[in-house]
Image 1 (cartoon, rainbow, N blue to C red):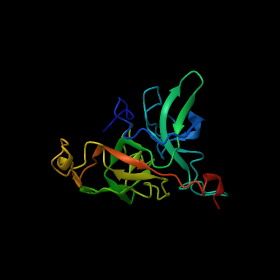
Image 2 (image 1 turned 120 degrees about the vertical axis):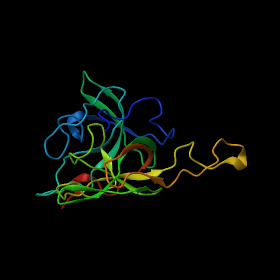
Image 3 (image 1 turned 180 degrees about the vertical axis):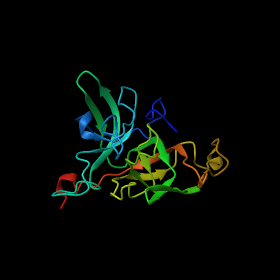
Length: 205
């Protein structure tokens, strides 16, 4: 289970689009002490880490139900002194992140899938079952039955296309991907991030 958020030079799968906005780390979840649903912490945000996060209040019930309509994005950089994260909230940017093979929760226990498919929806999941460095799963609800914000969809990485016809190095299709269906598997995937700008998180009922 990854204990740290995605890092390294390969976290970007596309050069754009880029729409960056600055947020205090307390605006973002699930990270640090603003982490898992049960109050347990996730990995702490540091410069060089690039988690996919939800923005705004983590509230599923009450006078305003913000989730699952939170704005989402990927952390580009983090200034520890100012405690400010620069987040790319652009629609249709492609990034690489860890995704858990969890499709739902039954009585609070994760239900696993054996197949990861192109186009499968990926959600910000604050369930404590996920690793410290993992914010994403395939489950539209967390383990407490609260709706998870949609982050995007599983997508091809640049080296995963079958392109022998144009002289490329890839000769085998790599999708769908098969994983264990009886255990938690958290692997790196490229994700096409999405945001519906017509429905901001502050418009909850």
